[in-house]
Length: 124
Image 1 (cartoon, one colour):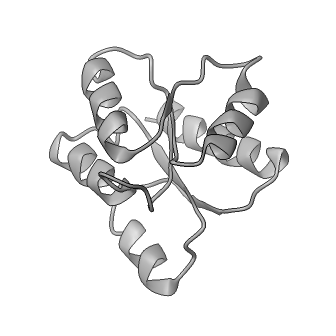
Image 2: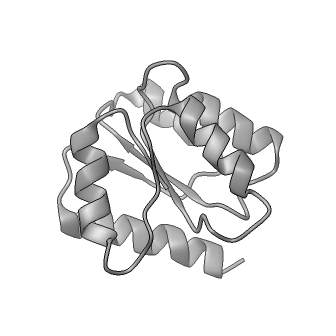
Image 3: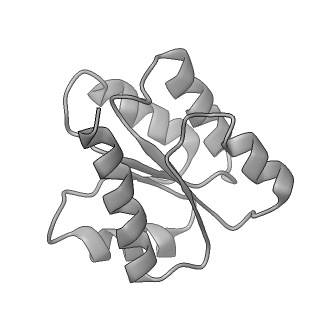
């Protein structure tokens, strides 16, 4: 599941992974929470790439929802964000995320982070 308010990022990541995965997308945190809520009891979502700065509900709202519902072990999360401030990074790592990838990123770097995120789930 790719959660980002940028249509360019959603389409880019979908294109990078379309041959290997069925890629779901959400344009904000509210949509992401709805998708996760509907799929939390199955294995359709193997990983989440989550932007932090989005309208309506941001990525931290998604992280809060996942923490409240004990979903991090079942659905690992890595952050994709253009905000690389010390405060944002420190706040993000107060959650059990796998890693962070700074925007802009290449297809190679996003593949590495997705492999790492999915590997994290497989190790559980």
